[in-house]
Length: 105
Image (cartoon, rainbow, N blue to C red; front, side, top):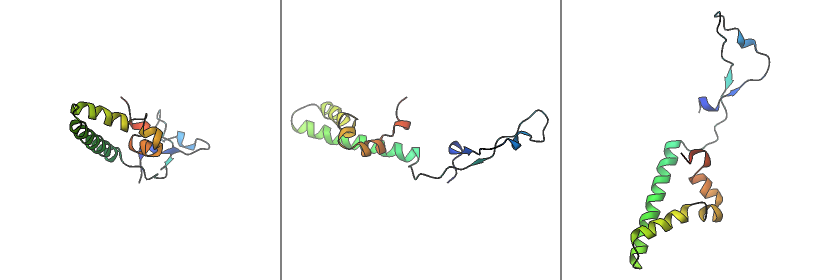
C-alpha cells in the first residue's frame, strides 16, 4: 500500500533539480516505504473507543454491585487501561492499543 507520508527520498546527485520549467525545481523522486502492517488510524480509534467503553461499563457495574458509585468503577477502568498498570503488566498490548504517535493533543 502506498502512503505518501511514508515516502523516502532517493539519495544521490540532484538531476531532478531541472524540471524544464524556468524558475521551478522539480520534486525529488521518491519510493514508497514498505507497509508495516500497522492498523489504520480509524481502526485504531474504533478499537480504543470499544475497549475504553467496555472496560468502563464493566468496572462501573462491578463498582455498583459492591455499593460504590459507577463513576468510581469508571475511574478504576481508566487506571487499569493506563500506563500505570496495563503499560507495566503488558507493555506490548498497551503500545499496540494506545500508540504514542497517535496519543495526545
